[in-house]
Each structure stands twice: as C-alpha cells, then as structure tokens.
Image 1 (tube, rainbow, N blue to C red):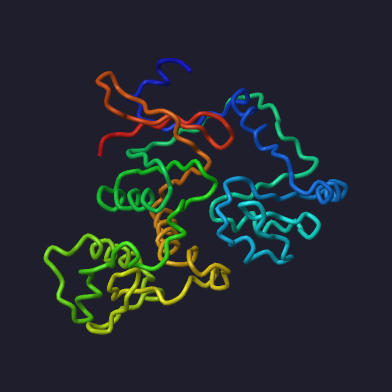
Image 2: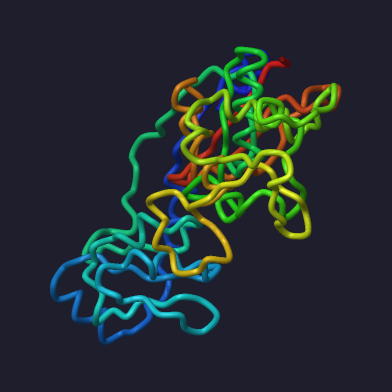
Length: 307
C-alpha cells in the first residue's frame, strides 16, 4: 500500500483482505473435536459438527435450548454429546459468548484469494468493544453529535459480560429518574447519574414492557440495597433458562438488545470478529485511528476525525 493510501488526511475506513494473513487464522479453527466416535458417524453423513471450546463460561443457555438434550456439563464447561446431537445449530446460534464452534465436514478450511479486496467507509469516531459500555458510548455519541460512529468487536457476537447482568440493586439502585418523580419520590437536582441513564434508556422505547416501579414505602431489598425500579421477569426468549442466578434475559440483556436496535436505526456499523491491534498516531503522537484485523484475517485501517 502506497504512502498516499496511508495518509491520515484521507480519514477513511479501509478493510483489506489478505490470503497470506488469513491462512494461519483459519487454521486455528481446526480444534480437536470431542467424542471421536460420534464425529466419525457425522463425517459419513456429510453434516456440520458443533463443539464447545474453552471460552465457555458455563451459563447453561445452550443446555436450555438444545432440542436433543445433547449438552451436559463436563470438565469445567459444557460439552456436546455427538451421538445425540442433531446438528441443528441451535446452540451455535444461541450461545451468548460465541463459545460454540462449527465445522462443516468436507468444506475447505482455506481457499486462496487471488485478489485483495478493499472496502472504504467514512467515519468520525471509532469505539473499540461492543460490550454494554461500548455500545452505550457509541449510541450516546451519535445522539449528542450526529457524527458517523463505527464499533469494532473482536468476538463473534456483541454484548460481552453485560448480557449476564441481573436485577438492578446488586451494585447500587437506580435513583432520581423521571419514573421516581412520577411515582411520588423526591429526586435530586441534578439527578443522580443512574437516573439520567435510565431516563435515556426509557427514551429509546419499550421500557414499560419490562420494568416496574414500587411506590414510596413499598420498595424491596436487592443485594443489600433498597430498590424501587425492578425487572419482574426474564425476557421471553430466556424465560426457561436453567440457572436463575445470572442472565441472560435480565437488565444487562435488555440494555444490549436495545443498543443493537439503536445501532440499526442510527446506521452505526458493528464490525464483529474485528480485533483492534494497534493505535494509529499523527506526527504529534495523538491517536487518530486504529489498526485491526477483519473477520477474514485481513487488515482494517480506521482513521477518525475529532468530534
């Protein structure tokens, strides 16, 4: 790539796919598959094999939704019984932390690319990480400035640990929101940051279908705190989850789903499997962009203007 193409004054977002870089990344996907006998049976049938890798956190979501009841808790993480597995992919699509890998028997792991593909996108702000905090930051920045925002995320899915957050009150209750004021509570001026955040979340729509508020004197205790606003039930798609002690399906999942919805409405690209590798700086040492890997193993040059 010429010096002209790298000139930061262009302020462009470039995605470059390179077979030389993609090859070792793709080869890493060929992990040993548990239960060799079950796997051999599927090789003959020419189907996909799913297995749970080391990033499993034992949240039990896959076990909850597996129609074949083929998932059990094994050595420190969940495991798939290949003899029972129907290869439906339900666990693969539903795993909130992308800890389930997919192998298509007979499909090539690597196909040499003859040409380098380059995609250019304009952007003003780059957010690294599509966890709850990153997505809130991106949407809030777009709200305040109207500028073009792009989010980079190294994982296959967004949300990070936020999707496992449960009820409000464990680390401190929400106070001073407009819901509190309307229910008869006296709120501070200016309101507490928790109330400001909740009001902003409510402004995105749909909160009334998930949250409730106790009137003064009827509050409940959660994690040692007095809580007025609460989330009575899990989100519908997670209502049958086996482990009641953690999400998904509670406050954190609601925030993530709402931010995904906001990103779609505002046209904020969320580039998953795009790991940030290096900051780009100008001649004065100021950070002006990010160098990242794309999901096909290429390079992502991200140069952002100051807001």
